[in-house]
Length: 505
Image 1 (cartoon, rainbow, N blue to C red):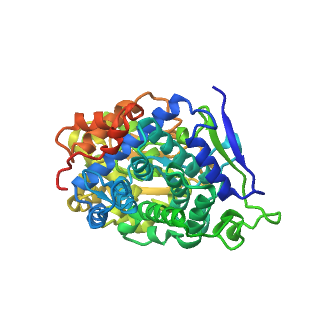
Image 2 (image 1 turned 90 degrees about the vertical axis):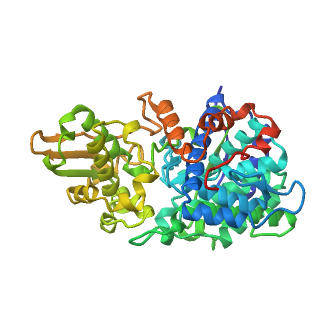
C-alpha cells in the first residue's frame, strides 16, 4: 500500500484544514491506514489502560481528585454523558476525559514521541505522549462507533498531535507540549461528533487563544500534581471548547496565521499571511505518526531509557557487579541535552515526591541498581520500575540514597546532542573494586524505542500490562481480553468498555 498525505500549506488556513482533514479521514474519504497502524495504536492504547487502572488502584492523588470531581457531574440527558474508568455512571464528557486522561498519564509511563521525522525534514523535536485516547473513546461512545471506527479516531488524534510535534517545538518557548495534544483533541472530538469545519476551527482557536500552559508546571525542586495532570486539563478544555463551538460559540479564526497567537508570535513567518510551517498529515498507508512513537517499559522518564538499557546490559554481561554494593566505587552517565537539563537537574538529586523522583535520572538508576542487588537478577522484566518504587519508603531508602551519591551525571556535548532525537544517546560506566572499569558503550535505541529491533517488545509490554493492571483488578486476563482486538469490538462493547471494577475505586 502506498503512502498518501494531505499537505496543509503555511499559506492556507491550517486550522480549517485540520478540521477538513479530520472529517475526511474519519469518513474514509482519504483511503485506509495499513493494518499495522491499527495494531500499533491498539498496543499504545492497551499500555495506557494498564497505567490508568493502576494509578486509580493506588489512589494516586490527581486521578483520585479528578475522578471524584467527574462523578459529581452526572449527565442528566440520555446519550449525552460517558463513563470514567471502572464505572457505569455517565458524566459530562469533558469531566470523564479529564479524569481518564489524568489516570493514564499519572505514572508518566505511557507512550512518547520526540517529534523527529528526518525523511520529511520535520525534526523540531517536540515531546508528546499518548495521553489523549480517552478523548477519542468518549466521542466514540457518544457517537455509537464500533471498535474499528474508535481506533481510527485514535489514529487521527495521534497523527495531528505527532505531526505538529515535528514542525513546531513548544518547549523552545517554555510552553508545555500538551498544546499539540489539545489541538488534536478538539479536532478529533469534533470530527467524530459531526462538527462542521468552521466549528472545529473555532474550537482550535479557543484552545490556542485561551488555554496555553507554560512549563512552569514542570519547574521547581519538587514537582506537583500539575505535572502529571497537564495533558488531562488540556484535553478537558479541548472538549469543552469543541462543545461550545458546536453550540454556536465562535472562537478566533485562522489561529495558526494569527500574528498574536503562539505560532507566529514566537516564530515570525518570512512571508506575510503565512504560518511558520507546512503540515503533512497521513491519509493512507503505514507512514503515520504513531508508528514512530516509543514505549516506556516501566515508570521512568523516557529520556532515562538509554541509561536503563546500559545498566541492564552491564549487569547481564558482568554478573559480578551484583555481588556486593560496597564494591561499587563510581558510576558515570553521559547523555545529551535536553535530557541533561531535565532529568539531570541538580535539584533532582534529592527528590522528595514521586513526580520529582520519576524525573530524576540518578534516582531511577539508583533504584534499579538497588533492586538488582536485592534480587540478584538483571533484566527488564525482573527490574521493571513499578509504583512501589516511588512510594515514600522507596524514595528515602538508605541504599538508594547511597547509590545516588556515587552517580556522576555528565553532558556529552555535541557528539551526543547531534544524535538526539534520532536515538537516546547515552553511555553508562561503572568503576568497580573487583571488575575495574566497565562501560555500556554508546546506547542509542533501548528497549521500547521505535527503532529498537531486539524482538522483545511484545513480551515486555504484556508483562508490564499484567504487572500494573494486576494492582487494580482481580482478573487480569479478563481486562486484557476487554481491551485487546479493539477493531473487532461492537458499538455496544465500546459503549461498555469501562464497565469493570477497579479495587479501591
